[in-house]
Length: 153
Ligand code: HEC
Ligand code: HEC
Image (cartoon, rainbow, N blue to C red; front, side):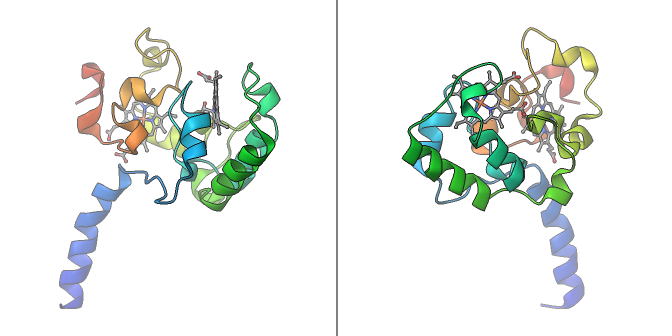
């Protein structure tokens, strides 16, 4: 294949990749079991290893709830999340405690969303990815899958 053709193909492939956030192939069952009952099991690359460590070290005070898990399971989940954490330079500053929905990466992708939608009864919270991204649990964040018609333009 000629280099120019290859570069052209790459350019076509990237926009498609941008709206997918992959779940690692070897996701332990414990992660989905323990971390997807109140919200989706967030894809680990959405926060950095350091952010995940802070979250996993403070499950007793998890955003107003106690979500402590068995020690061994907790260690398994923490190891998994840290290993697959995203590049901190890409994610940017988060918050304290860390939130995907307050990361610079998130803000960059959502600055066009009018603020009233974050308080919309269909959404309730920016952490509620599935309210807008129907297939968020599968890592699909493309525009065509946005659940709220007014946001699909
Ligand atoms: C009993 C319910 C519950 C369980 C179980 C739970 N969480 Fe949460 N989590 C919450 C609540 C409540 C919030 C805050 C949501 C909001 O602000 O709307 C939250 C928020 C988060 C956020 C920040 C979301 C954002 O970007 O604003 C992360 C990351 C997170 N949880 C990770 C985890 C992990 C990892 C586990 C498993 C160890 C877990 N959660 C298990 C209730 C839970
Ligand atoms: C109020 C609705 C809403 C909520 C809640 C929401 N998003 Fe979005 N998100 C959008 C819209 C609208 C876009 C822009 C879609 C587009 O134009 O491609 C977007 C874009 C994105 C993109 C970029 C997709 C691309 O095309 O490159 C990612 C990644 C993303 N969101 C992740 C998340 C995550 C993770 C959460 C939860 C922590 C979340 N979103 C919560 C509405 C929302």
